[in-house]
Image (cartoon, rainbow, N blue to C red; front, side, top):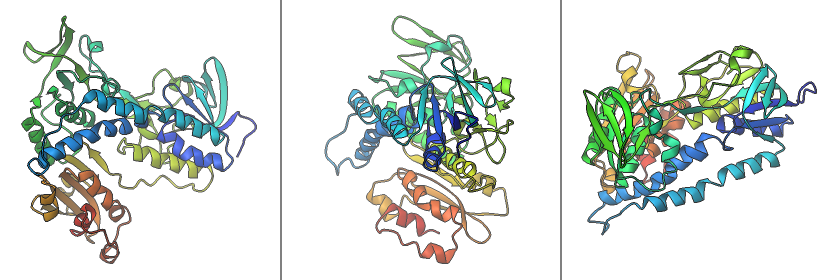
Amino acid sequence: MKNNKYDYDVIYIGSGHAAFDGAKKLCKKGFKIAFVEADAVGGTCPNWGCNAKITLDLPITLAQKQHRMNGIVEGDTKINWHANMQNKHAGIDNIKVDREATMKSLGMDVIHGFAKFSDAHTLEINGEHVTADKIVIATGLTPHKVNVENTELSHDSKDFLNLDEMPKSMAIVGTGYIAMEFATMANEAGCDVTMLMHSDKALRGFYQPYVEKVINEMKASGINFIQNADIHAFNRDSDNYIVNYGDKKELNVAWILDASGRIPMVHNMGLEDVGVKYDERKGIIVNDHLQTSVDNIYASGDVAATGQPKLTPTATFESQYLNHLFSGETDKAIDFPAIPSVVFTSPRISQMGVSVAEAEQSDKYTVEKHDMAGSWFRQATKAKIAENAYVFDKEHRLVGFTEISDDADNTIDTLVPAVNMHMNEEEIERNVHLFPSIGHEAWKNL
């Protein structure tokens, strides 16, 4: 509980899911809590990440579903990007206000400003010093800027998620989550999209045969891919941006999106001064209790180098773990579950647990693959591509799953309990799912 030696029991640097979800429970247990936020309360996910992205993507998904149902559903759809963006603002802009109000109503303090360590227990914020028994660094990631001449001419993911009018053409640097998802949106909204690849592979963390199918679908919709682009510089004339790449090649576009990745927010915080160790690419080094190289300083969420997927569910799980650790409810190391992840392209790719690539190189697992496009449920939705792969251990317990389909996000969500609870055949049989549904179809293959 309250340590009278310090202003707070716990200060969180950042106010996103890596902080708030666990902090509110600590507060209810009597801990004195503060958040230091240099930007929008709530962090990346609600303001310029998950919530914003999905709000913009929902009309895209509807339009793509209509394309599949064309002839059954009469007419055609056209994305009004300006109206789509206005709808995003209507749903998203008040989240930061509501979140801060919730924090304060629970008795937690919100300090707006940039935090810098003065010592292991002290932060300097806006010229004032604030102390805490424990400090949790939950600063997340920030967009990476590709190292080329005039890199400042490019835009980042935050810019895209506030793009009031869709440009006629766009160059997208990268082929990770953000690049592939935003390319799908822009293309459906009528933009001529060119993807500039660092190598010849996209979405490296996902099952490559499925990734190739997504790329083929994107190409069929008009998206251009340039492999091993070797970008040299960005320039601008009176009308367009110019990307110089390859052997004296030029690409003229109306807008450049740098989606080359995201890097940990670790700089200018005084971490070196207090002895907190970090890796420029992976983040702050933590042990199996999310503890940094300084005993009373912890890291949570995307900024922590845990080796786990840098996703909102991961951050939430870590913040909940710290709640239990700080309140004395556990002293055990954090035990991560399998965490599902999805790329919101068309079709989508989802995965969790042991990957197909890992399973196929080991005698510990068996892989069962299914082409579901011919199933009656997928035929009813006019699915063009629907494939999945189940990874089982020697006791035939599901330990991994991946799918490519328009419903891949919903399919994997139904299978989370089967993976993380290590269900046996009897337990799986007792999970009776709604019929007809995508969940019923997913479980019948177990």
